[in-house]
Amino acid sequence: MSTKKNSLKILLASAECAPFAKTGGLGDVLGSLPGPLKKLGSDVRVIIPKYGSIDVKKYKLKKIKSNIKIISNKKVEKINLWLGQIPGSRVPIYFIDNKKYFGSDKVYFATKFDSERFLFFSLASLQILPLINFKPDVIHCHDYHAGFIPDLIISGRGVFPSLIENNNDEDWNDIKTVYTIHNFIYQGQAEVDILSTGNLTKNSLASLSVDAIDGDINFVVQAILNSNAITTVSPTYSKEIMTKEFGAGLEKIVKRRTKDLVGIINGIDMDFFNPKKDKNLYKKYDYKSLNKKKENKANLQKKLGLPVKDVPLVGLVSRLTWQKGIDLITEKFTDLDCQFVFLGTGEKIYEKHLDKLAKKYPKKISTKIMFDVSLANQIYAGSDIFLMPSRFEPCGLGQMISMRYGTIPLVRETGGLKDTVPRLSEKEEKLTKVNTIKAKGFSFKKLSSGVLCKELERAIKVYYNNKKVWKKIQINGMKENFSWDNSAKKYLNLYKKIIKK
Image (tube, rainbow, N blue to C red; front, side):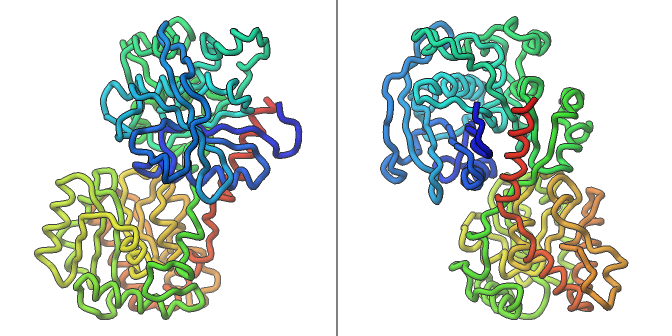
């Protein structure tokens, strides 16, 4: 076990890591968190599957071991192990290469096969550790895909065969684990016989025996019950998942681990999302030159075919799904004295809904069913208000990015949105001395189109009638430090805490 200050050995295990493999926020977290952890003195490494879509030449990956025998379900599966570096850092990243499980370009199949694939990934991730001479103090497991790692470590059954072969008596079962819930909807439920992939049976652990009673195994349940600590990606979400509304059927399981549950807000890339340096913008600016933000707005309006005039421009950059509350935005919103720009892709019903509004009101609404990083940043910079009316939001990044660009977020009070966007109170709205205002945006509680519309109308009135208050809210958001350094310090403290137990 490490003894020097901050010299912890940390392994982050995940299905995704940007830029190698990314389908959403999970990949961003794994691409961003390791660097700051390393800067704090940790020996941090990452491990993910090597999907067929990962470009070996582009990322200069090297095959460091070939034909490693992984004992799974009384059979031998062979893997290759590749090594690379997370761009912009000196953090090593390992790739588990097995054509049967990860040869496809797809990260997920959304079938029962995914459970088998990721249980094998968890097993292989542990079995290669002695071969690379790396014994972590903590393995940080992300979402259900790495959720069986705590079970495998505790059971100790067939996890480290290379140690047994070499008569190495070192006890590897004292590795601590942290499990992070990024999204509670995906739980990795599978039939009981899936356990054989990890050399387990329903009798291997008491938690498995109980879990198997209803005929299936739940990866998230196992991770919650057997990890040394559980985290969510915001303090509010850690409380929400203990309720029936947000618990996805597991609220009672989570309550059993209340003392070991903590919420840690994700960060954003403060260098990439920086209006002072952003090459995607028409004009660069900071909080001292907000007049240039107006030039970005005018340029965006012109680009989108909207009338170039001084009305609030309301932006939304999002996956277009039920979770994101897209259906709350109705035709009634066109009565408001503002313009809208929507950017994203997702479920056809919401794509068609926003596209229909744009076609009916082309002078008020622009809808782009696509995703374009450059245009997204131009919307963050050129908009006045940024909408995030989510039904639930474990953390959320859009609200933090928009604040970085001086665009005031309007969010539903849930998860990380509630934690990061202090609402402008009615009392603050009337202040003449604005230096005491702490607000960074607008928000609403009740999941209602009418309530959202009313709060947006309120924000529009502040935009028109109280420029000093508006500017103060902008500056509050732009000065906020949403860097990954803050998150990394909190995770490091958590790692130290569980090691001491």
